[in-house]
Length: 178
Image (cartoon, rainbow, N blue to C red; front, side, top):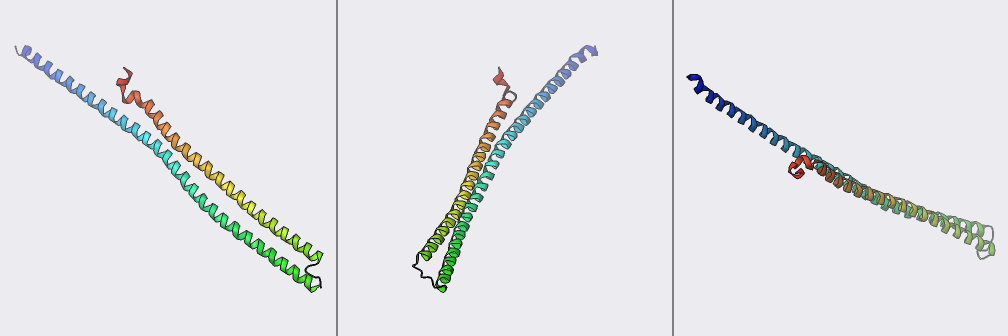
């Protein structure tokens, strides 16, 4: 008689164990789903952060190039002034040599030599200025390229994050598949 009474008890215990196992499995699935969501979000944030970091690095380089442009402009100006000063000094020496030889400074030869020296001085100054402008143009081109790369990195980070979210969507929200 004991055995028939024990059977319902064992059945109840077995059912309770099954319910516990089912609850544990559901809890594990919930934890797994939560961890998967956290991993996906971390990946998305990492992708966006990488894009932002690349953009900020490009901005820093652009600022450094701007500083370099200002320095180059100042150096170019000083170089031009020094070249002009050297030519003026050379012209003054040439005049002194002409006077020492007894040549009048208003003679055609003296005027021609003075005009030639002045043209050379102007040409040298223009060459220095053009070299400076070429450097400025090159540095501006580098800035534009860096700005474009920085913006592209920012956009790429956002698009990659969106793509990662779309790929993970079926796992994150399985109810969307229904």
